[in-house]
Amino acid sequence: MDKETVEEYMDYYSETQGVLPERLEEFGEAYRTQGYLTREQLYEIAYESSTRSAYHVKKNSEEVCREVTRNVLNVEGDFSKIALIEGLTGFKAPTASCVVAAAFPDKHAVVDTRVWASLERFNYLEGRKETFKAADYVEMIGPIREIAEETGYRPVDIGYALFAYDDDKREGTLH
Image: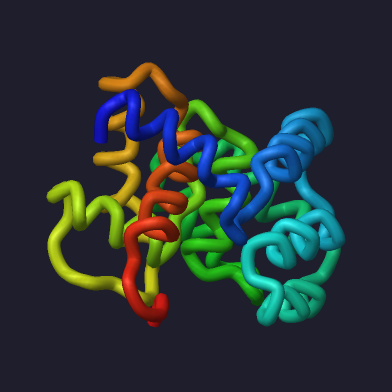
């Protein structure tokens, strides 16, 4: 994926149903300022990412939400960050990626089926994928960072462009 394609699809992203970059930035600012996220903030992130399953987030206690998100800011390793968030009810890797991308947009991206499909189209990954775990996030973030390095964009922006690319190119239904 070259710089021109990234630019084209970053523009196109606003026409998709993806997480709003402005909202993710707001969450990230609050997260870094507070040093944690509240249950309500996590619910809002989950709602932006996956409306249907967001209600599960409210099953977590406030204390656990704050503890886990505080720890995510301090733990090293992509797998560990995603796995910690996956420990919360209502968070699978794609929704967890929203949390880490909000906190660390220069290192992380929001990922899902569309991002995987675009990475596959550009020959970074092989095979179709419809469900994701922390290890799958690690598999995706490598090529995303590579594209970011080559184009001068942040990984979070590359994720948006990859999402939009699939939205534009996919024929048929998502699943």
